[in-house]
Amino acid sequence: MTYVGHKFSLVLSREITDEESTILQDAGFAGAAFSTDALPTDAEVAVTRIDFDDDAAPSLAEAIESALETVKTVSDLTVPGLSVPAVPQAPAEEAAAEEA
Image 1 (cartoon, helix red, strand yellow):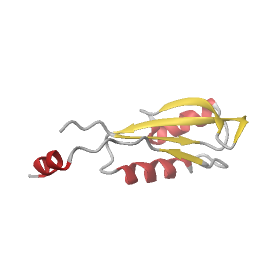
Image 2 (image 1 turned 180 degrees about the vertical axis):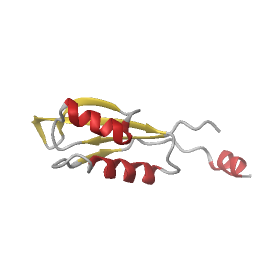
Image 3 (image 1 turned 90 degrees about the vertical axis):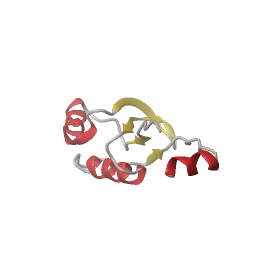
């Protein structure tokens, strides 16, 4: 079984500065991809989107929880958006064989 990591994206409440980006990278987001996006509820508001492919966390839930905690290292920053791409499931026979 090939492990590709836990993929998800956080949309921050605003566009962050270079200094805040550095703080987040130093706090654990070193492998994440930062980009500018629009707030999903208001396309005229610029925000920062962070895309993750976390291969260190044991579960997707733990990867997301860790990322949300790390965002708190920057004051006045929240996460109004989270997206997780659909992950195709292996057929039941393959899954059972991998578990054995």
